[in-house]
Length: 175
Image (cartoon, rainbow, N blue to C red):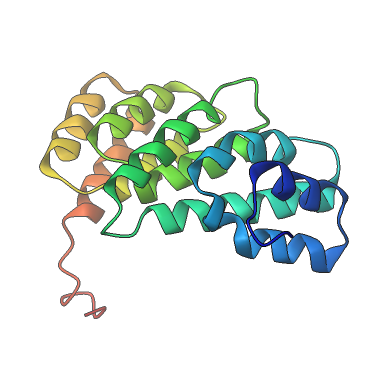
């Protein structure tokens, strides 16, 4: 890729490059930032398996970079872009990975949007697990409210998420 990577050069390398070029593009994706998530989502949803996989990895690099503690503006921008990839017109695998990313960068606003996906049979478990990872007492309240209107199976899963959110890591031997 060029010295100053752009969205266009990133997409070109991912769509038309060889393995080395794609790998280089993936590693530089976070330099371009969250504006690349949407175009990468379109490549990820495409039919070229190698380009799709590279686009997925590039999105993950961008999302994990945006999720660092000192980058709340980037996290919000990533959340906005990822929410668009959760739309039903995207393949399930794109939606699921976008939802997983929201668990990394999302806050209460994203948890509220994810709660709407709990009734979508294709991605309900992905949404529940992403919500489980989003910190804050407001998310606990959201899960409790959602559990009231869920099916018996959905309620059991949400109860499990609430239990996981409040586990003492020392008691289970993690910290």
